[in-house]
Image: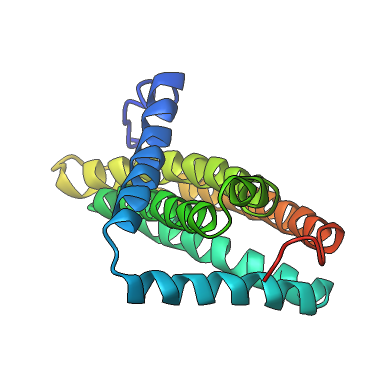
Length: 202
């Protein structure tokens, strides 16, 4: 007997939009939190952001690729691990909210530092890879929630059931595809960094 878990509610546009709203909530929370930060913390963020731009202008292609890909891959790994846990839902939603919070803080900081130009800098340097990474993470979160539900059903039922070998194989394949998309996005981010080198004040 196979593990049967209803998936129709998960693989819908409404559910996907709901996961995007979690990221948006994190983004708004990050923007609000930035407004309540003291001057010392804001100055530290400013120095960090300046260092971020300066370092990216000084690093070569491979270094930027590794830096961009490693950060997004870490979040995807958290989602992957959460999916193979029957109680992984809090970590899945927390990962999406954390992604949004980080984007919100960075965009708010750039606006605070450079004004309207900061929004332009953020749109060029942060949002392209940020949006792709967000969409990939939401897809990964949907797959992780689905598998986590199956693990919960598998562990809580008293009926005899076969394993999840085929399900896990497909799950891993999907996450490999998502990682490939992140790699392509990181490559595009490198190109953007090279094109904009010297255009953003540090």
